Amino acid sequence: IELLAVIVILSILIVVLVPRLAGFGERANEKATKAFLAQLDVAIAEYENRFGDYPPSHFPDAWGAPPNTTNLGGEALVVSLWSKEWGGTGLAEDKLMNSDGDATKKPLATFPNPDLFELKDSWGNPIAYLHRRDYTREDVYVSEDPETGEQVESTLKAKANKTTGGWQRATKYQLVSAGADGRFGTDDDVGNFESTPETEE
Image (cartoon, rainbow, N blue to C red):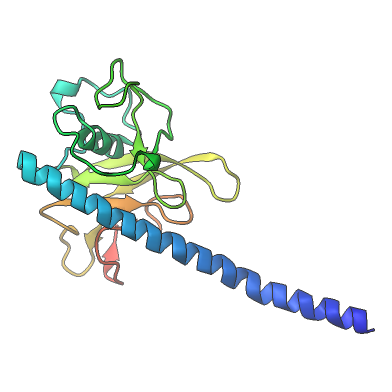
């Protein structure tokens, strides 16, 4: 009887504590991602100070055509921040990934290989980037489903404010993480703008 009582108590503790511990881990990932987005804001501000504009979220003519449009804004951001003309970023290269495995015919950035990298969030998925000129565009991103580990595609749209109808960061750019579920356009997205009940796609 005592053994059964102990098992019941342990079962109750597991049922109560496991979700809370999981939630703590997600909050930690969210805070770490927000901190990294703040670092990106600094690097992008330095780029804008040097070139007079924020990095593009498309491929300029000088780069040639991209191999595809998947992860486009995030890849354009990395090419810009590690470009041969700039190379001024102090961001760690261990935050780079290539979730869709694409590459250009020749290297566009300072890396020796032509892979098109994205920057990753604390869940290991690509961070999306949109310059204000591309806010009306819809981008497809490849990320990993946290439950199955399979690659999934989701569509990123620039975030607008429900109250005003205007864009978040209307004169600048948006950085967005897909959050814990690995899918853009859901409630757990993390951006470099204030998350309020008025914020929606």
